[in-house]
Amino acid sequence: MEGKVILLVIIGTIGVMLMAFSVVFFVLLYRRKVLENKLEMQSVKTKHQEEMLSATLKSQEEERNRLGTELHDGVGAMLSSIKLNLQVVNKNNDLGQLKPALGHLDETITQVRNISHQMMPIILKKYGVKRAIEDLFEKTSNSSLNLSITQWEEPDLDGEHALMLYRIVQELVNNSLKHAEATFIELSIKKEGVKTIISYSDNGNGFPENVIKNSDGIGLLNVKNRAQTIGAKPIFYNHEKGGAKVDLVIDTLID
Image (cartoon, rainbow, N blue to C red; front, side, top):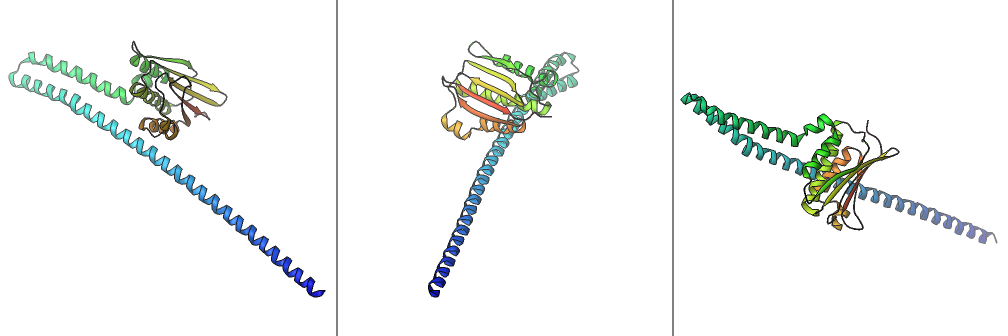
């Protein structure tokens, strides 16, 4: 009888130890799985950040190249022409040659102003982001394309963030012009509690499904990157009746 009791105790002890080992094993397995998932999410996040950085750098490089070309081919050529005219005036003491030189100088000043306006719209600096976007819409609208602001509740954005919002709208308009074949574009900004919702839509071809899923187009990556700087989360989708729609949700107001 005593031997049976000892045997039962041994069997019970072994059973408890097996259960303890099983619990420890499953806890370690669970922790390993959690760590693997965390590392995978971190890898995806890092890859996404690298893609956004790459898109931003590419966009900046394209902008530098474009400005360099405009300065070289436009402003540089005009300044060379002015220099030649002034050399003729100096050599021949012919004041009549000053008139074409002054004309080229006026053209150069206008072109420099245009380049400056593209880099930092003067109207944005003087009158604010709403007027700057209205000006963009007015200049883009034509007989076959209508752009309008349907609602505007002033977003709480400082100068730098206002410029980012302007660039986001500009990028979306360019995307609609290049790919959408839209006939109208609408923008609205409204506040819901502590959230500010910026909605952009057109009636064009809409986003391809892979673009919505991955947001891998350079233009959309630029939008995502700039949206991040103003604390906004962009959502890309298509209307049921066609056309693209982008919502930017700012969860917290920017001081």
